[in-house]
Image (cartoon, rainbow, N blue to C red; front, side):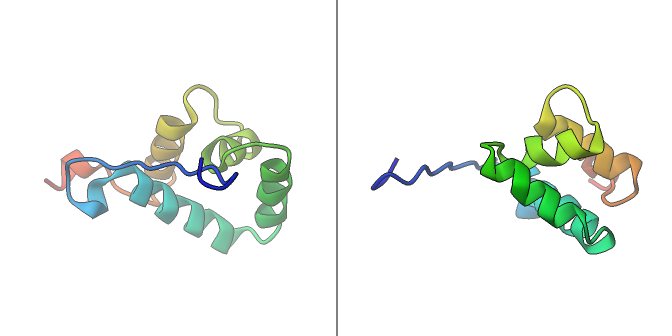
Length: 87
């Protein structure tokens, strides 16, 4: 917390394009780009206290860990490719 503002810091010891936070942003961008009503629904859930990834997973009916679930969804939908396949 900083001046009543919650901060979250996440990083991984790998190139940016392989980090989960970056992959989440790519997946979320593509989903929002292709579904104009999704943005307002995500914002509505965030106003209810959801974090971004759990909000997307709630709307996309992705169960389990939302951070891993969003990555798996992005792979399944062809938004991203599994990093191990290109390294």
